[in-house]
Length: 632
Figure 1 (cartoon, rainbow, N blue to C red):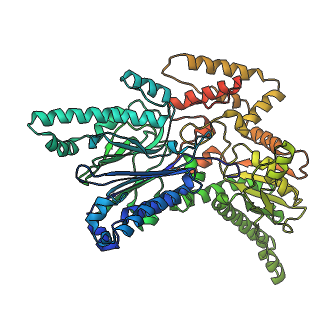
Figure 2: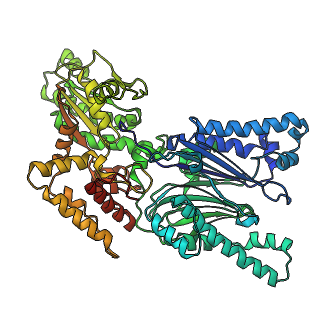
Figure 3: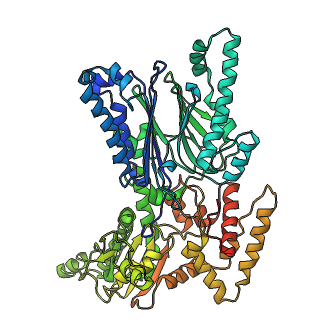
């Protein structure tokens, strides 16, 4: 999208099901799992470029031998950095001990990162928090192998404060309030409890401490631990974890907000945030990759057994539609078709705006992530043109000449590569006017293809803040001197903040919210702004089972078109000569295009959890009080 928007995180997990010697013999390396993890993380680098982490577990090691290895980085190229470190350790070991090269047992014993269970994570930092300490996976260490816990996730909790207080009630003293820490400590608490109970059972059965360890590994019920840990969570999450002895799990939230996919055969079990990562890296068919069901966890035991268990009662499915519009890689077969459909479905509004005059319209896209929806828009435009050609031929009523037929057939949809992102310019100039001029040159344009009589139609994935449109894109497009510029959003108007993992926390940043405020000012109804504040404040101060999103009332008096027109006015600076129009996808058509991902709270305000409704009310209170903090 033209506005920079960050999304939190992607996960990758690989569990090898055969002895390491098997992979050495078949694939030529015992580092098969490490290599696949590198590819899985690279194939999901679109989900996070501020940090990356990797952890591995060796199964069945002797006491005194290290069985957990972890590396994290927040460098400029974090994935490359962590695997450079891993390769450095491997190469160093081979350099000093060349005899290890053909000795898999020695490799496993002496070289870090080789193992059977792997967890990786890519991260986008939000709100300027990007130290290496904030990079997943997180490790909760213990001298008991079973009580070592490694956690990484694509998640955001809306009730972190309540979770923090619950930990205190359990007698704990958490070192941070961050949702990652509270989640890990909650799971860790019930993991400790489960291990202690099993140890008592082992003791009663006459097992000594050495014999108790495999007994605990076999009998430990991950399902029960997760049920106790997650019962009060509110948020969107795909939570992955590993235990020191080799059990692993991935838990998905009850509304299926955040994505998680898995594949299994007799060699591996693989989990990732995106299906194409698995499909490409393991070269497996689309239909062999399954989705983790909402409210369920896939559980991988140390013995290699696999199960999918219901942990929480599933809610109405509200998988994040932004995954389909923008975040996930468009190489997924379903997502590719859905993005094309978004372009097709918005086209009738475009045709109406240009009065079906395709001859005097130039179609393009910005940025590159909008290319797929652009193809869908072109399909619809071509269908319209074919219809126009048929009508023109029929109109001739038997008088059609070869010359006239050729004239009709030569009419084509005009598509051009109009905008090119030139360079990631740094705003090192401090004066506002100078900075705006610099930002205006982030994009360059192709000259000589747009006529003064043309409508220039540009499709974008979505419009969040409108800042880049206002300060850069429209200024550059206007230099081509079109009659009008029509900016088409393949997504509906973004009216509400997200609280489940997308970096859209502040209401006042959203250009649709600014448009609603401006309309109330114009119409003398601005008093509603304070009324909504009072309702939100009261709601937050009252214990109630029924939370209401009062911010919806701000938009209620206005049609979608009125909001769109006001946004166009806000982003059109005075020196723009062309008439600027904005066209947004409708929510109904979004649902038609993406029928499996109906999560639309940022468009409609219909949050799938009570925590989401509390967040939007709190975000409004923060806006009204001038508080810049996020609402969760």
